[in-house]
Length: 211
Ligand code: BEZ
Image (cartoon, rainbow, N blue to C red; front, side):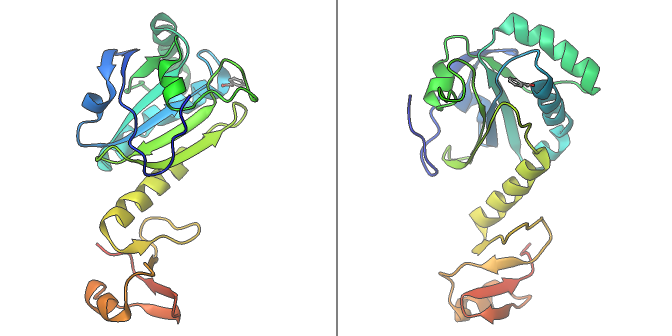
């Protein structure tokens, strides 16, 4: 078991997956990554989640994000279940699912929470930047399916704020006004944000989302 925190290097690993043996870093290349776990194959919420993730293929590609899923079931189980996901969710699973039968990756990423369930992985999400640092961690219980719109929203925020000196306010969606980082002086803000900004308070300066 390891304790991972934001800013830590995402651990690399080799794993058997529904698409063969893969090395995580090689799979990611220079892309952003999502690594997400689900409790078990052939379960209802997981079936809808993996179908939803497959349907967001174009949105992930637009954002240069590669997706890898994980459960502690084996490759044969994954392959059979993928057919069910494709059939029932009207999609085609287009990302590898790790067959983590020995729980090696689940332990590396602390995806088993024994007080929730001794053996099955919870619904963990890790967003990993191209430099392999962990930028976001979210954990849901088995009973709650994830919101993939929210994942796209936070990826938009992570990618914007990685390159511009801004932060995104509550409930922000791509295209809406953003907050100028507190470390930026007003003189610097005049140069960095040619569309101008509104100083609501000295510490709260709003500006249109930069290009
Ligand atoms: C599900 O995916 O539906 C599920 C999996 C494990 C426990 C509860 C629900």
